[in-house]
Image 1 (spheres, rainbow, N blue to C red):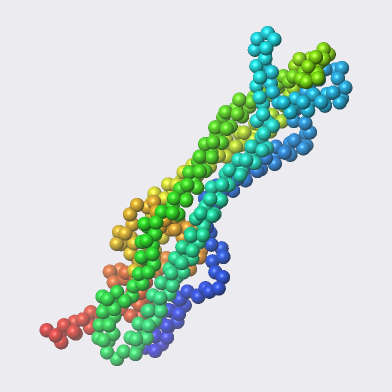
Image 2 (image 1 turned 30 degrees about the horizontal axis):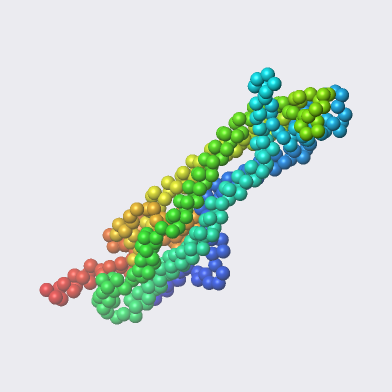
Length: 392
């Protein structure tokens, strides 16, 4: 028997999780993977397209090329290019002697509008960083720590039970104390369950998360409106008629009324516009999917931790409407599953519990580890029958 008890002690000692003290959980993820991807794409793509626009401008020089009269000198032609780019107004014949003016300013504002778009798209992530991350990090640190501690407490409890059983000369006394402890709920540590139940009545995290994704949808819609109203109007405008007869040059007879100019940067303008529409169109379903995840519980994670004593959120049907802080915390626990050392152990125990032939006697990790340590999870039948025969 001593060899069996020694083997059980070694098995239980190996099942204990290492104590992680000091600076821990440095790699805690405070953004969900899809949210991080949306942030990088929504902010990074305008910056990338802006660099493309600036690179085209620096490589090809002037973004327009005007067809100045042949009698103009080089300096006069350069002045025409500069003046037409500064005004960037198309003069379209409306009536004899009258012109309809059409501004082409989106071409000039393209790099700066992309920079403004990147800043605006970063605002929801900034809101999350300052409004939700401090509270979320403290919640995750506490919950991860308590989940691992609750698992360790269960293992240490089984170790203590094995030692008591080894020292006890009368098995009846041991089983009577064990059944009394279960009846009085001595094995349960309800602090974590009550804390999580309180999080169901809190809505600060979920409100911030909803606001973040709603702002992303709002800014994406504003981007569509901007591109549709301003870019689409000049999307196919390759040439425009420019007037340089202003100021001191208005009375010069040798200067024509209109000079035709060509937009050499039109292809880049079109690429940037189409790429922006395509990128944000692909992001919209991802943002909507992030919002829909708040409408359902992650019962897979909860079912694993149902093996801990006093963690009965599922079995007691304590889960109500999923739009609360607890559901957000569960999403981040799933994202930080590598920090939950107890999760892998409990997952294995759940698989073994489902395959064991004594499912009706196993409810928690205490019961299962008791069985693995060589003890019955409940009083053996022969002891029960003996008690009945002694007390007819």
